[in-house]
Length: 86
Image (cartoon, rainbow, N blue to C red; front, side, top):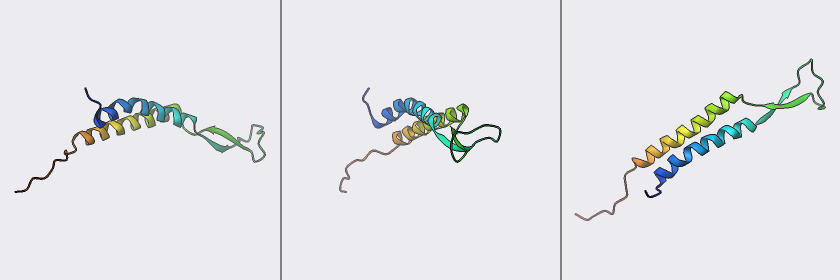
């Protein structure tokens, strides 16, 4: 089996989906410190995870599905043939 763009996209869909899920799990944002906690930062802001685990899994699955759909679009693309004169 030759490695075409269609097959490369299909093979890459799972690792890309896992990578997107892990990447979104690492994102942090500054959130206000709750009033009952003692925050060490001067502006009372703390770094917290931006997304929950199920949201990260959905982002990863969405990225995998998008690559699979792109591979189907590439597979249906008409091939370029040289034009012949009539």
